[in-house]
Image (cartoon, helix red, strand yellow):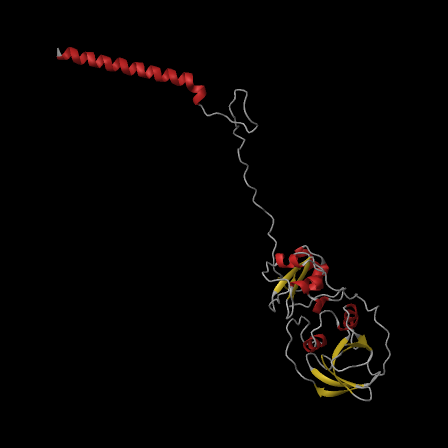
Length: 315
């Protein structure tokens, strides 16, 4: 009796297993088309109503990674080496040559002039002007000086100062799209004709040394460097160009010396400037100056009327 019951149970299990396997296989074969991965195409919905994508298609396109160099927002310091030219430096940054000259007027105000080896040039990373702020500078007056919108200066340099707030001295800035003064011509064809008699002055001895004024971007040891320390003028360029620059910017000028005025002469190929200390009753005047008797040397000189090739005085 027990053997019969065991055989019956075994037969039941064998039949059940066979039936289950057959049903699963049959179901898988009939449902294969519905269970296989659906090919969804980005073009839209298929005729059967299902969304299909091909293996070459994607639902979301990948974000493109920028390959171009991100623009700098601060001036570039370029140390001049043998073979450097203003044109070459400008090409390396893809900016106009004038931007390099306007950013370094103390050295490069004259068209055709080239920087000295070892010079540290300030170069803008975009078309415009690189500069260092000096005492009294504000975003508004820089915008007026360089003919740009004040917001452009604040935005490019990420400044958080108000338009009329004084900027810290010594702050390196970029003025995008800025334009500087007219650059001096390469030749001296515009040199005025002046008459003078030689020996019309007397060296009186050493002159006064004064502290270096903030914002002095003129070449160290030159006459322009010294005079800027006595009077902080808002222009740059060679000494001979100071007179015309002053006139264009509304400064009073003339041919008569006054204490505190700036004398401009043609006493070198680049001109010469000196600071008028005093004027005598006979019409002569005393100046203090640098780089007349020697580089970086300050002297005092008595000048008699007609004694120098005078361009004029800036008051």
